[in-house]
Structure formats: structure tokens, C-alpha cells
Length: 245
Image (cartoon, rainbow, N blue to C red; front, side, top):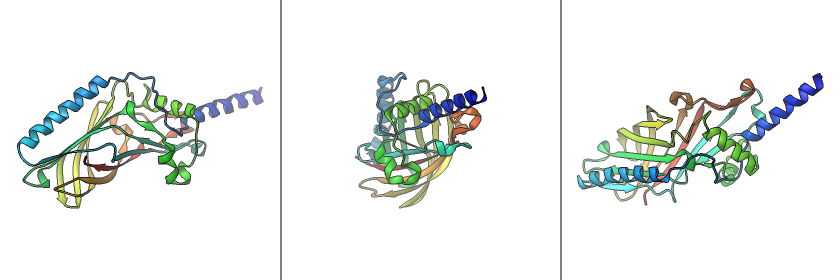
């Protein structure tokens, strides 16, 4: 009887690890995708920045094809070594930057992407990161990770599809800036300061930076199973390289 209970426990742990694992990209997601909402939201931003450009200065449109947005989520729990770290990326996003004639102190930027369009653990992004991200996992494991991370018990991408970043204040001097931003996720908004490296102005735009976001600050409970034996850490790292079109 004891042996049977141990076997069942090990089977459950193995199944859980499989669901938390990930590797190549899986394009499907059993969540409602509403592209019309995306189009309307993008049109609203475009209209806002068209008005800003008419008031003077220059508007830069960020180019997803040459840019990169990466989100790093980390394994946790006493059995963390049996789990896997994750790399999420946003191959599609909408972003604008307005540089007024008065200079960067009065600049503004907005960036937004959909959670249900995130790419999960593209092997091309994992392999250069070394041992902690070296595991290669099945498409089925990636789909399991996608469903758990974006599903009803975690980020709820069906109900809260957008992540939005809006600048409130910009301080500093090229190429080093500090930006106070408002981040909207999971129906909640939080403000924080992030460092930015900005090059190319006033003719082009090349921005790099990173910051740490805590999921619980936005009412999101990081994925956890078996009483926390295997879990995802609350803190995630977001890195970005943004280029104008």
C-alpha cells in the first residue's frame, strides 16, 4: 500500500513537471482571441500620437520586426531543479515615442502587447542563456505551460488580454534616462521608475533597458503545485530592445 501511494505521488509530480516544462514555439492557445479589440486599441494610440505630432516634434513608431521584448520567469520550490525556467517573448506589439520640440524632458512613450500573442520558450532565445535555460522540451509541455501561465488560475489572458506601459515622467540626459511609467496588467495599474539607455535621437530611436516586476503586485498568483513543491517565482525580469521603424 505504501509503495502504491509513493508511485502515485511520483506519477503526479512527473505530470506536473511536464506541464511546467517548455521548449519550441506553440502557436495555438485555447483562449478567446479578439483581434478587433487589438485593432481598435492600436488605432486609439495612433490617433493620440498623430495629435502629438501635429503639436510639434517627431513621433517614432516602434518596429516589432527589429525589436525584442523578453520576459524571464524562474522556477522555485524545494523541487525547483525538476522544473524549468521560461522565456516569453512578444513578437507583436504596438509602440510609439513622441519627442517634442522642447526636448526629451517632455517626451512620451507607450507600448502594449497581448498576452495571448506571447511566444513561449522559443529555443533560439533559450539556448544562448546557458545551463539554466538549456533544457529542450516537447511541444506538448509548452502547450501545458501556456495554458497554466495564461489561463484562469494565473494571468487570465482571456479576461485581461493587454499589458500596457505608459510613460508619466522622464528624467536624465542622453544616453541615460530614468522613466516613471505606469504598467497596466491583470486589470490593475502600478507605477515604477525604470532606467533607459536611449540612442539615435533626434533622427532615429534605439532604446534598451530592463526591470523587475512582481506578479503579486498586480493581483496575480504565481503558478504553484503540490503545496509549493514546484512553483514559479513571483519576480520576473523584463528586458527590451526597441528600435524605430
